[in-house]
Length: 504
Length: 95
Image (tube, rainbow over all chains, first blue to last red; front, side, top):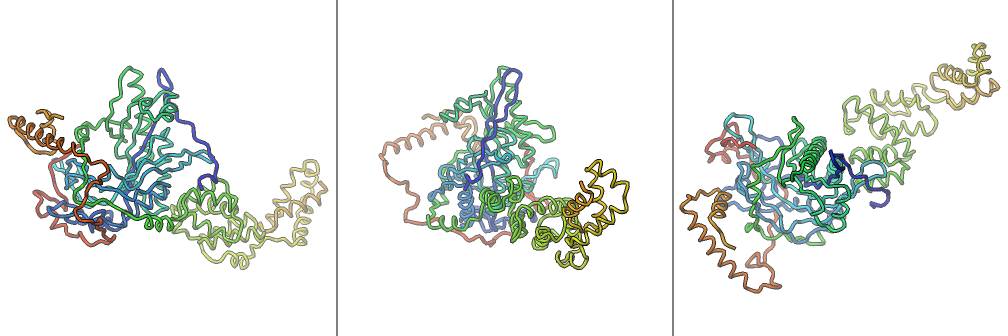
């Protein structure tokens, strides 16, 4: 379905150095917390914000003799995510231990999937603007355990450790280095988040840390990337640095921009980039080396002897595939073709499933384009003003659909419709009944309009003379008639009558 | 592959096992003996042999996505050398 909307690739971002122009090459590793009730290998809850150390089983605190037992639903969620990213699903995968020491990792190792991940190559179409999108290839998705949380600012000499998050299932989604600028990187994260939310496999809440990104950045001279793309030979590219643990798209953009300029300055000065892990400091807007991580990079992976390989059946994968919801790209394409919307409007309405479902109910049985206008401009505008979400909109989709149907049928003018919308928004009620009860119906009775036009012409002889010289003044009469009718006259009919009566 | 004293020191440090400086040469030589044995194993032709993951045919045991555990803060913290306000308290780790 990807090809129903045609697109071209965006231009890579070019940064001018002191000597040359440079391009960026970016790959992302996204850690997405799997939406599940219980943890990946224990029966403890995944709920965010509970009392510290209350969501902890003895498996999570790594008590001797405890053995991990895999949560089948977490596996299903990873498979669902893979299918949503049009990726290969590996029926055979296996778990490995990644060894390192840190107080919030009681096991002394993280159970992960280095050698045999559950999901292989896939792709994400990253929309930049209507008609422009980057296809970013996914290298793999593997399942792994999250670590606990360390808090360093509660005591001057101690760090405090909470193991509630320890052992919660994560999907690490690894992209190929297909991303060519800070804006693309941010758009990629947002698109991935949108897909995960559609799938219901991750809530995408970056503030709570449900989605975090490690960003690999390198720079190269213009033209080098094409050589790399052709040969797959990384020697055409620069040395990369990894920016760890980013949890905001705004910071991701700023950090990439800073890091690229830092690397360019070093290379143009005749220096060399050292491959390393760096941390972004948002307060100072700079990245710094995390030297402590260098030694720890020797993770001494080996297959986890506590866990047999994870073998799943194709029939099970097929069942999950059959239950996939309509995904953002498909929904957007359908909104464009079925409702005649612009790609921009379709993007806005398909940003999340709640908006999309609301719009579809408004548009049911009426003009889709008109419905889209009212949802996007009037409703979203009004909700934003009140800082409200679509889920607590005072106007139901059926009510807004009623307003749109009244406009479409010519029962009310656009101006009256705005008043009507405001009444429905603040007081509630059935739009058709409100129009009837309060006499808001557009006057299409030509006799009545004609009488009003005659009256206005008779009352303004001076204006009549002026209008005969300058036909643009016809608007004055239309305005007067509309005012006299309380906005209920059909403006097109009024305009036509006035023009005719003035003999213009 | 041969393990020298520096590598032995590094492996011990990665595993957070304290090994006194004068014990390192012997540790290195033990590592070399182990690796020597493994090298011997690699002489066996295992072409086309699936890695054995279990003695009897078994399927990885699965669990339903139901909360059945936790809610035992006191037990979790019971063996901690230091705990405050529900947290484990450890010597400060700073990035």
